[in-house]
Every structure is written in C-alpha cells, then in structure tokens.
Length: 43
Image (tube, rainbow, N blue to C red; front, side, top):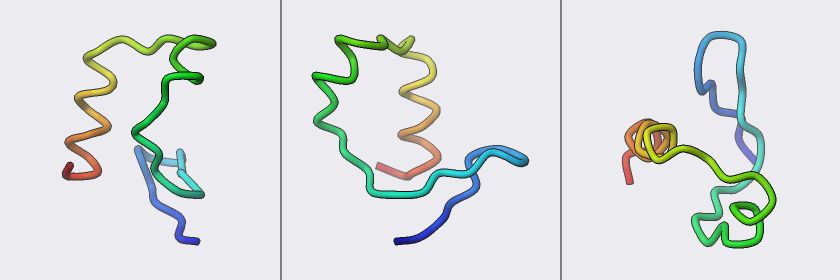
C-alpha cells in the first residue's frame, strides 16, 4: 500500500475505488472536487 500526498500535509493511504456509489450516498462530493482528484490521480 502506498501513501500519496494529495495537498500539503494531506495524505491518502489505501486503494482507489472509483465505484463509490455507497460513499456518494453517505457523503456527496461536489463535482469540482471529483474532477480535481481525477486530475491528481491522472485518470
């Protein structure tokens, strides 16, 4: 498992799961944040 820095002093640890239907139902994220994350992960 790798650790990636998202922004300064904020890290992501784990796997990327773009099938986030359950998560989105609990905590919906604005589309602009999702686009930023996808750009950061180069998807």
